[in-house]
Length: 251
Image 1 (cartoon, one colour):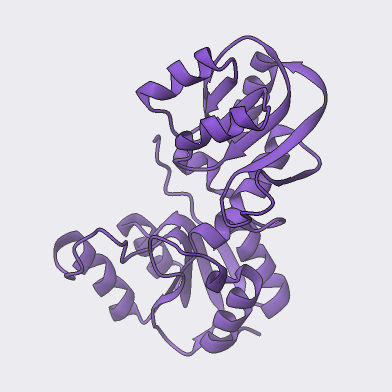
Image 2 (cartoon, one colour):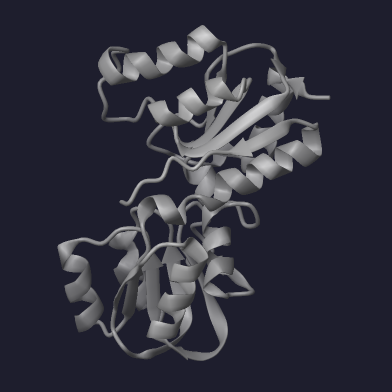
């Protein structure tokens, strides 16, 4: 069945609403490939390994969370970046990338997926008046030992997590990826536990001194949810074949 490149672009933009976000990179179609799209490969980052897998799978488009052309990077298509873009263009594959829009979607986004993995049934943005800030808040049905939450999340993500604190927790705030800088906002909101992907040295001190539990579960691991959910949505809505490729990253 399949779809056209323009139809897929319109569907993704309508779903994820990139125009709502002031982001660090352009959201949407970043590299234009062939017009007809029948097979889509999704992954967290548009790494060379992911692109090589897409070529092997004869994909027409790649959907990622971390694409190219970040605000602070060298714009020249040379070296590693040149090779990546050349791989796409020589194979006539389109690259679609959505960063903050894929973090914030209330049902298919990374944070929605992490919330479900934590066992939180209902959740909402931490600051309702700032819906584009990628931090969510919700509650477990009952107080639960922090170690139990950490063990459950480790099982869900199939990798060990770093946890700090031993208090019982119920009110949880979280942000996928590199969201450790939001720990103060989580504490201000009365969270018992803050969960994110990465940890910095100062994060542990803040957690201890503000009496909030903390879990770092991996940048890559916490951001595998969105592209898989949206890829599945594309297969149902547009009739494309979807393959998720996990180019694993321990960070």
